[in-house]
Length: 167
Image 1 (cartoon, rainbow, N blue to C red):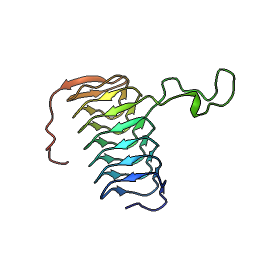
Image 2: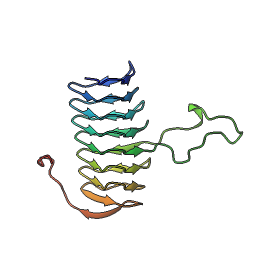
Image 3: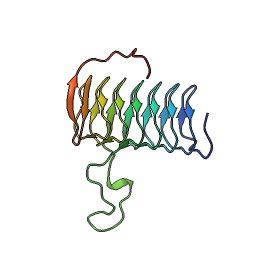
């Protein structure tokens, strides 16, 4: 159920029992069953959010991102979809959609991304991986790994059960 002051474009596909809080901007995306979207979140076109995900407030998920089921995204997480962002072309005219393409990013099932993390494009965050708060992810994160820092580096690798008790 959408909160107040939400902009939800008609091309958004919402699953069953999706919870959307106030001040959210969604367009051209798909959000799976029982997912929760916090306040001040923007999710752009061609983004897929799986089932039972939690997207915390102040997060930006740009075109080209796929988030599988049961993923946690903390507050203020930013995804990037362009390795060489520019406002203008080499000729000096403003860029249009024809002048670039979104570089895909994949967040696999059960991963957790801490608050304030930045996820550069073209990476995969593996199943049940943990990205520490404030990390800058520049490379793939293996499944079960815990990474932190700028650039993010592995702290430990272990398999985490999906059935963990909630905090």
